[in-house]
Image (cartoon, rainbow, N blue to C red; front, side):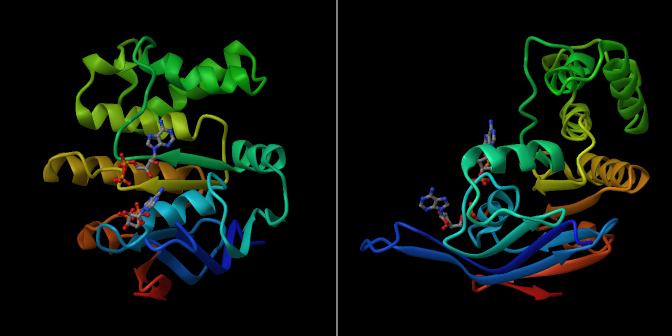
Length: 225
Ligand code: ADP
Ligand code: ADP
């Protein structure tokens, strides 16, 4: 079973208006369990749009979007949100951690909201932090962490509720090249160790080359690269 399937996805902003901008013109993508797909395109090509549609944060104008075999077409917001919460983790260029909570708490809270017991949530948070090498920073708030540490914690938070699919939008884009390299490696390890599938948008071709495969977003379509 595919973890993610996009077929013939179309998306325009300001449809029908003078400033209409067609971003996706029939994008197809199939992600199998365990695959880590690099999504490569220049800035403005539509990577964020594609990831938002893939994660059911935004709707396509046409085409099929299915997550873990569940077709999202025609579903209402509540069902789409339920599929997203159960199956998808997001990471962005910026960490978006809650500033008043510690690193550990930032990973525990989404689990508590999902009905996990406090003890189990804490154990999972500690395990995830350990895997990305920031266990000793668990009690610090985000502001006390380095940029690389903040992103590592954000990866853990995205995986807190054990999604099947991780969608990452330039996850190391705000870091200096050396830090980006190490943080990126930590992300790929984490994805592999937890058996996740991932689509990771980046314009760093060296990083992209280390993934299972690469797709390019060109002219609103996805092309094997
Ligand atoms: P990328 O992530 O590859 O930089 P985006 O998906 O963010 O690209 O944006 C693709 C194009 O759509 C860009 O030209 C951007 O300016 C435009 N765009 C993005 N969001 C909106 C929006 N809400 N309304 C209008 N245009 C948008
Ligand atoms: P851009 O895509 O223009 O580079 P950012 O890197 O700031 O923009 O953010 C990446 C994407 O994350 C954007 O498309 C934005 O809509 C989304 N985003 C920003 N903040 C949040 C948030 N707090 N929660 C969910 N999505 C967010």
